[in-house]
Image (cartoon, rainbow, N blue to C red; front, side, top):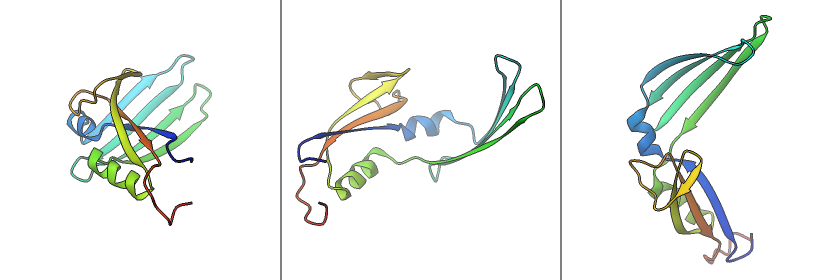
Length: 126
């Protein structure tokens, strides 16, 4: 990445997620075409993690499992990781319903959009 070039990073808003997720949750949805999707979630807000297993069962009996593990980082930790990568944050916007809003609101925004640049001098990063 060239110095000064923008780096755009979108990430889920951890604090909002922690306040809205149940610790154990099962959701079953019938999809168009008759397939059934069952989602099993186990959430641990104290560690900022969630484990989700999704089962898809098609009408013909075929289907399978998908597993997803997520670790949510708070904004100050994201800034620290960006800096370790030689990036400096310039702006943070909030996103909800697929739209980028301004400013980022930790209690309302579904996601955060961070704009950063590589203008830090890091001789260890080419």
